[in-house]
Image (tube, rainbow, N blue to C red; front, side, top):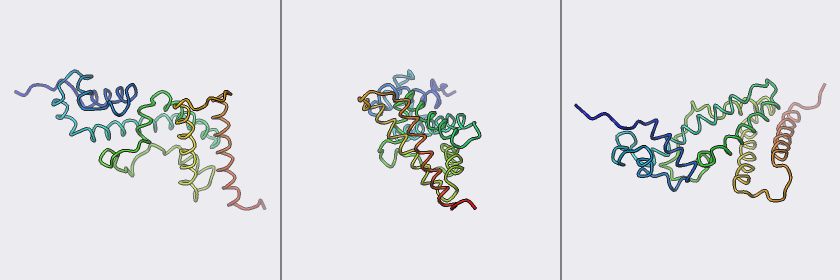
Length: 195
């Protein structure tokens, strides 16, 4: 009769997430995960093929969690309000899980990247919200603008780059408002002048 496994894929992914958030991507090794879950490294290979698969599994878990946080925030029914809520949920997630968040935007070897998943719902609420603000013809551009700005802001915040003083929360809210204005202006210009 085979010996029961002393760990599970879920425990491995959770351990990897903890290492990622506390020690960073360089420390996310099969050996390090094995120590955290309390098994020898060869035991992990019953559940995970290699480090590349481990990183992909963790990234998928992070994407689902971030998507759920943004979906849960987008409940106002007003596109501008939802954009604010989504952006603040994105920022809160990044600040609470800096290593996991960084993994989503890290330059990784191709073998470590998630395969594009056409069914991925990570940014569904963002796409719906910016579509309501920008119009359907500029959804991708608008969503990329929001994510690029928010990830840049959060990246600077995590790096401690805001040293001039002032209220960082107010600066973030100001930025979201300006982005919403810009996206909405594009839709109004495309619609033409009112009759």
